[in-house]
Image 1 (cartoon, rainbow, N blue to C red):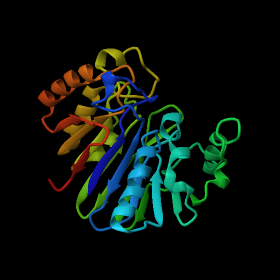
Image 2: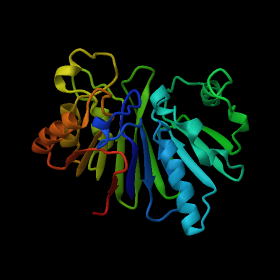
Image 3: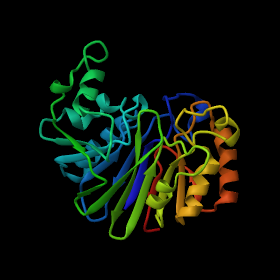
Length: 279
């Protein structure tokens, strides 16, 4: 598998020259399988706009067409869905877009209404029903899900409104995505168990330990907590993401140095970065 980051910023997009190295778009991650042409995406933050353009460009260059796209959602806060109306493949009536929310005890009852609301005329000129693609809203009240050779396991974790971590397993390769997570006074052992032995753990690290003291209840982690999860779970690589909108490149580079000293397999995710699990 390969993972490509299209959005690594948390809470709100940013656009400043001091933030170009790590990127300004909000959460969007593409997961590519070695044995499938299926397009799998996690979250639809503002980064999904560029992902959509890349999908169309690749199809033109390779003379291929991917009829079915899967977008799984960790949760539905604004910064994780705001890019969806700008996802160009969703305007193609030849495509099927699967919008997936899995895991037990989700608060949401009608996922379709979330997307209809953000695209009603007061907020956006094109309603959901006029986009073009066939949308399938998949609310799976189960902890496991299987698609095209990939096993997906969901784990609920602490975040205002609820959020879920995902473990993707394909041909003995494992990616775990755990963003927008608040551990509280101690590390959430459910997430440690989910991430056990993963080739790549992608973990929220929005705050420094000092900032976290004043952010109780905001639903995020410090880089030290992300590293602790990685160590307890015995993961090979740790990608820290969901960078705070106030943290510029200079600040994040210094944080990355600290993290690498504490966990050599760690790095801060950058927009446009591709990570191969086979390397």
